[in-house]
Image 1 (cartoon, rainbow, N blue to C red):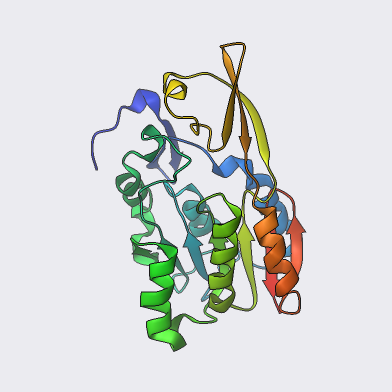
Image 2: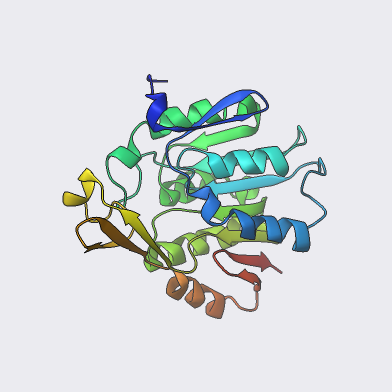
Length: 245
């Protein structure tokens, strides 16, 4: 991994391993995810359940991946499959997209035997891997976590791919279901990149910016309406969680 300036990065020490994260998106939906597993899906978190399989569309630097590996995928027979181009999002600055593959690879090192990484788009993964090996990947996954481009079209498209890959009784989880509005200090990059806050940027008093992150509920609500006979809505908050029936 390339040398990283530790003064500009958040570092975590879990199980004495120096995880490195430059941006902390996970905390936006962490409480809702904990509520789901602690109150609704209570028989799996930290239970060392065998043969649990998670598919993640979009991993960024791996913080959500690590949470699943430490709390859900604890048994040696469980696995995480990750699909990401590692190019970052069109709503992120070049700084936010730096070293993504190196950071992710570093962060998952303690769990490397459980993680399968596909460096490609969700479309290519679905077409070239899943459809080419139908019986292996279809209806395989207990949980699919989808955190890719934040727009309604991609949200709907990825939900359609995921519906074939999640097993009956399994769950599809979408962050960013509801819009996020934040007020943050201006940075130098804001003079060039309007989307440095992952959303719609407006300037206030030349010192602060107001970030309005687009929601994806229109695209996902279309999916819910069309496939309402196949999926139950389990949670609608910052997370949308659907269960295949």
